[in-house]
Length: 69
Image (cartoon, rainbow, N blue to C red; front, side, top):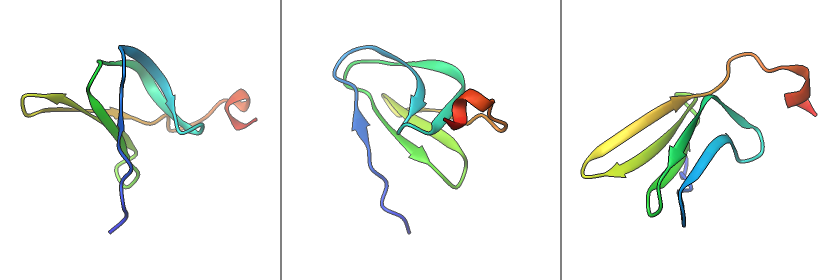
């Protein structure tokens, strides 16, 4: 099992790229204090919204040329 590194937002952020190469299909907001991590097997970023709520946001399947630079 792969160790998953979690991050925690220190302020409200709008995310479209995680870890310099993980591009999301659509940008998503991560609120202050919410934690997030990449589920590489599923190709999604997971966001713990608190109160038992978890959202998942998919990775772009085909990347444009500018994403490969």
